[in-house]
Amino acid sequence: MKNISIRIDDAAIDKLDTLAKAQDRSRNWVVKDALQQYFDQQDWMVEAIRDGIRDADAGKTVPHDQVVDEIDALIEAARKA
Image (cartoon, rainbow, N blue to C red; front, top):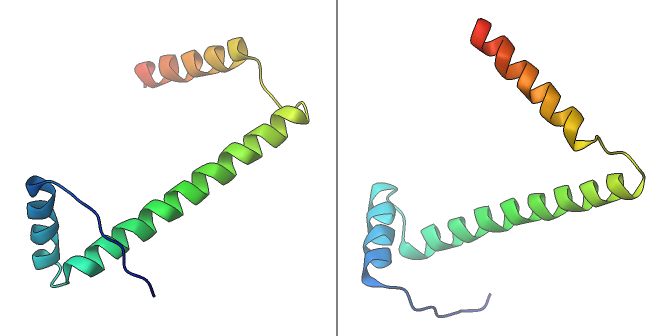
């Protein structure tokens, strides 16, 4: 395992310390957990974008006007409910 060093402002350090204390964890644990959550989210987002590009390349798209019409219909139905 390797070490890294970052510079963050005092307010971020205070938040980090508050979270670590509330979770009865170390600063290191909170930072590692936050990074892992960020990596997971970014991996999901990149894959979703790739899926969208593949669908677009394959012609699997819906015209914008059709989407807007369907959303407008859903909103109108919700207002009447």
